[in-house]
Amino acid sequence: MIRERVLTLALSDLLKNHFTKTIKQRTPVNFAKVHWTELLSVINQSPIDIDPDTFFTHSWSSRFEATTQQKAYKAIKADVVSTNAKKHLLDFVEDARHYLSIFSPETGWQKGQGEIVRSLQALRIFRVSQHTPGVLSLVRANKSGIIADKALKRALRAIENFHFQFTAVTSSRSSGGISAMYSSFGRRLYEAPDSNAAGILISELIDKLEERKPSISEFMAGFEQINFLNSNTKQSALVRYILQKISTHLELAFTEDQAMLTIEHLHPQSMIDHAWTPDIVGSIGNLILLPSKQNGYLKDDDFKTKSKTLQAFGASIPRDILNASEWEPDQVWQRTSNLAELSYSTIWKIG
Image (cartoon, rainbow, N blue to C red; front, side, top):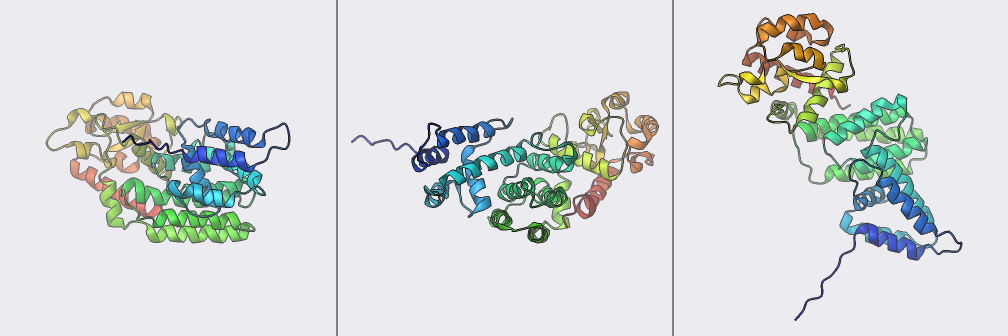
């Protein structure tokens, strides 16, 4: 007996067919075809791959009801009928532009919105997706004038700081409650009549994030495991992000943009041994940022030799490093611990 192979269509293919059948063509211009092509064109502008099926699931969850990719077609098909199909399709096109500005934040934002861009870039570094329906609703509300940039920055900063603690540092896992929280927030924000109502919802979201953050002991244990070596670059983007945020908090002054800075190991990687293990040498406490030219001056010298050069760099070097007369493994662990406490209580504070 020959079994017939069942071909499962992607969500995007099913929706395309549904919109094509539901939107009646009454003019020479094929409305469904034109706007469907526009939608996919927007998504395809992203420098990183955006899965259309994931986009449709997130968009619908941010406006109407939380759904999964497997159940999305049934939910959307039930609501999209001939009387509203055009509006739903145009809403998807609008959301595609907002979605692009979330996952490709280098586009879609103005010069004075750098803080928004940096938060969105950070969330990409954390490789988190749970937040997307909520963030999509926030961006939509901002672009439509419901919330100002100040409110958007506040919300994104809290989401960034939460996922730094929860996802990037402690690798915590959610049973689904966090995804549901973001979808619920997105839908309620979509229905918010004005900025006051939206502001209340943002405050409630921040409170919920604060309640769900890991404990300081969990955070410190995770922070101490973050590591960067030339032989272990898996966390390089996260380490650079952490050092940049710490440098900004400490008000360090650099001669060039932070994005151009290089990571310097105070105890050099070439001197790893039984006392200076890879865990210690690659830990946050042994790392600082420097312009590449200054980094080149230090070479692979030991700390005492480096210290003389670091003194000349002055304002770009953390004060505790300038004050250190020696550099031993215990000091590195202590500095890592100190930075973890500062990070949890101040730099990545949620509320």
